[in-house]
Length: 321
Ligand SMILES: NC(=O)c1ccc[n+]([C@@H]2O[C@H](COP(=O)([O-])OP(=O)(O)OC[C@H]3O[C@@H](n4cnc5c(N)ncnc54)[C@H](OP(=O)(O)O)[C@@H]3O)[C@@H](O)[C@H]2O)c1
Image (cartoon, rainbow, N blue to C red; front, side, top):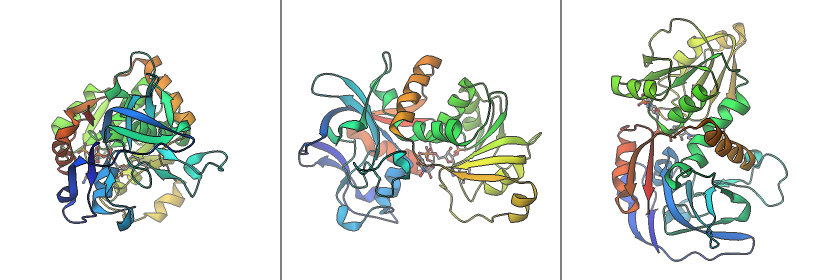
């Protein structure tokens, strides 16, 4: 079948191992279901996979794509939940030490067909397109859990999103605005900050600029480049929720500020199937149109990968079939 896959790990030139071609038809084991893919979205995780981060060399070739949407054999339209837990695990599957994401053990969604455990498909709400549903499973689910499960922020409080145009950042902006928070955003260019304002940010600032006042919570996915600003931006008792570190994993900790102002730093990864189902309902109920900056036929996936590698994002990048 047609597929977009990582042929081998390539730490220095990840796009050199990106291949658009053919992979064997997947087998559908007991308790699993085949989904005919209609759309798949691109995440930074796919670039980590091409680099060989979080995946063993013997697992290549690996079809890319952590999330997507498509149809079951009976015609039901579904979004995919990427977190695949051990069948015996009880409770929050993001805490299961044996959990994997699509593209870590299971093949990914950038293909004609993807096979997942039956519980990893969630019906799409009426009116949602396949492209919109395909952005929900990773970036939007991660943003939803950061904001509504982990941060403890209330409507009316002020949130700062580090990064304006990325998948997780744009989801946080749109979710925060719809939930009644005051949304502040940093972005690296005027164009990116203008996008954040279009999506509902109440104010935007160049990366690292001093804010007019301190905020209740900061949402981090950037890491080294923004961490000290995130720490300085918080009110006493405030919280940083972090899901990633695109620019580096080792910022200075600023421990004195951490204990003296009684700040909290909380990690967050993906979300549960129940959170994904609630996210889909929230997006439908609130009338949110998830921002898709680039939509391409799957055959042209390399253009999307290249844009993400260059930092040339304006919302989610989606490949359709
Ligand atoms: N833990 C999880 O479950 C989970 C889930 C999803 C993503 N993640 C992680 O979250 C991160 C973002 O993923 P994504 O898919 O949203 O990526 P993306 O679409 O490529 O977005 C990258 C974002 O990072 C910002 N950024 C990058 N380098 C920067 C720098 N030097 N200074 C300031 N801002 C910078 C960009 O800000 P501008 O808009 O200003 O360019 C952009 O908003 C990745 O590290 C990914 O691995 C983790």
